[in-house]
Length: 474
Image: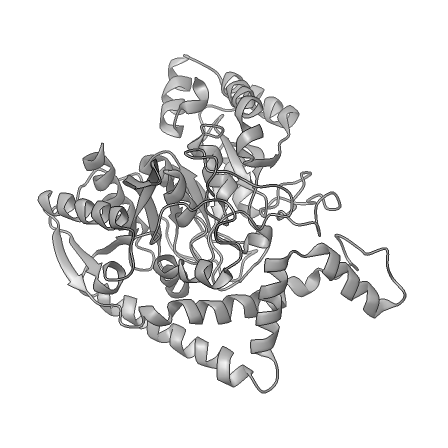
């Protein structure tokens, strides 16, 4: 059962000679072949390449011989990068590696498997994938969350040791919560976005999904750092996130935003979060009620800014340079129109239309410019709170995973459910989801995540608090 192990356990096993990277890759392939037919977490995988890399693995490297699944909007040389869209499926093969992939390979890791997602990372259930449905391993009738639903589901089902996802408004943390794994979004600029297919460039961030907080720290060590290929990448020293991971929370001030626990929460979600707060307090943390007064504006602000950036970023998909080109073409304009009509799914079209509208003449000042100003107020809320406390604690989502198709007819309800995760993206701060008990829904015990947020470049504090909770929970 080598597929069930963590990164830390693989490193120990390799060092002792108990097993080899090839045996781990073989175990994963067997598990995927057996179970992924019902879960649908992977869109493709290159077993031959993974076997070759496993046989040549340098076990002296930080991630030597460790297979990592990759969300299918991150470019890996020679492999498909479909973004779960008809626009790129079967017609695009990546000519280069994303910076994070180069970093993984340099650290000895083995990229293995392309994980499903909502099309172009737009969604929170992985139901917007144009290629297949991904199911929650804890209840196959339910969604895994999104947009990194495949990345979360494969780790939860032990079909991957760990995975990479991307988080624009909660797309790592929410599926991690729904699937019962750890999902970490570092500070904006801490991890290079070069080679990530852009959704909203000022919000997107790559991060790990893992089986433990320690594994998240190990992967963040490798992924972090300045990249000259990404103009938004921060040129700041990167600490060793595994150092001080067991420091605990004694003497730390942890804030509880009153706006996050006063809303319409599932009672079991609220009870689990409150239990975690009390447990951390019993370990010496000082719990402080704080306020983020502009929280109520997070959703409308995000759903103006993110679609506006998407409208611009996705204009490159036009049937000219790469991807789908419609066969129903009479002139250049019909090529653009028909290629985009055939290539994009309903949610992507909805967001492009919304984004184009808020950027259009006569509406730019009323919507886009005003949303940018409100974003500044939201950032100031967090800055002021982190002058009082070391970290914040909150739910990840108001409810556990819903039934498949249960929310697909009401996109507004889906958008509103992002209320607890969007703020971290608008403010550019680090945030993590750590498993925090279960909620009973219709007889199913479904995972619940605890969210911990920290100040900009405060990854070390976030990981320390998360690890302290993980120890208490276990």
